[in-house]
Image 1 (cartoon, helix red, strand yellow):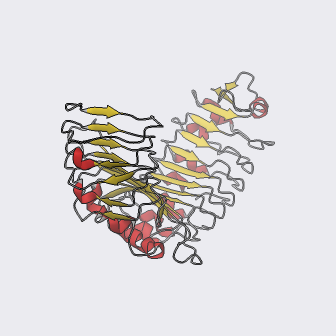
Image 2 (image 1 turned 30 degrees about the vertical axis):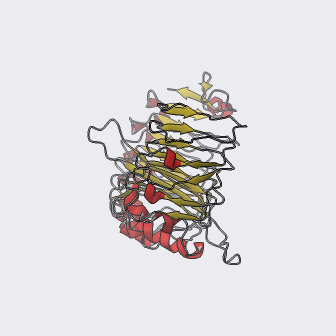
Image 3 (image 1 turned 120 degrees about the horizontal axis):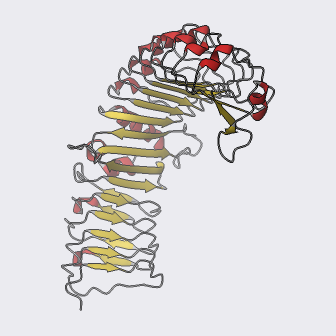
Length: 431
């Protein structure tokens, strides 16, 4: 009775059970049925449908008897769909299959989803979660799509429950479109291989992305990481290793390296200086790390060095002054750090120095007042601070010093402000 209807929105009609469609609805382009009780839908009656939202239709089973060439958006999160033929949706751009607990098989021949830009899946044999989306930088005249891939694999194989899998997850950023690395989605999502083997498969898949720019890994490190010649950002979180693999030192274009919560790692490789393009090095909560290799001083382009919560680090390289372009040096919560080398006074670009909760540091270099670019100094301590400020530091006009009220008063400051409004005992004074 509505032959020219283009959009039908019944979302949220929680008692809606059945949609009667006795004839083709040739003009219908958008159909929204989320959170309804609709049990089935024949897409053969809507050949020109572009968007279909069936989010949280828990009773729903999708029938796709013919090709839907114009469908670009399909969201069936939380449905009872068991089989899905994506060969019939060649122009699909968005596909959300999250919480489809009954999904057993996806048919998707290689190359049938060349336009897929967003893909989400979880609660399957291989993944706790799996997401893909593409993003275009509108600020660039000739924008290239960037694919973001994020997944968290399960830790127990349902086929081999006694074979506990290593923790494994990844978060990628690449200029390669989704279809170029996904290949056959059916193979990646629900293959005949058990997750034990899929772990190896995904490691190889990641290392085969020649244009990968950013990669975050949780739990384990692929052996062939050195193949990622274009990698610029690498983040390692909760990786259970004592030493970084030498292959990381072969990433010639790496600009940012973050190692966090790697509780067993004891040292960094001396060859880390081979990362010639590195600009940012973050070492966070690596509680077994004992020292920073001297070779780090050869990283001439390093701008940001953050060593935070590394309890066992006692000293810094004496030739730290070779880092001519370093702008930020953050050493917060390094409770065993004994001192700061005098060579820091040669780092003329240094803007921020964080020594918060470095309770063993008693002195700063006498000539620190020559760091004319220094604008922030954090010396906050929760206990009794033994740090002595050299007289030369009072020459740095505009320097903001952050500490506890008691600390700042002990240095003779009488006027200061809350450094972080609402925070407990963080105050600052500006010279």
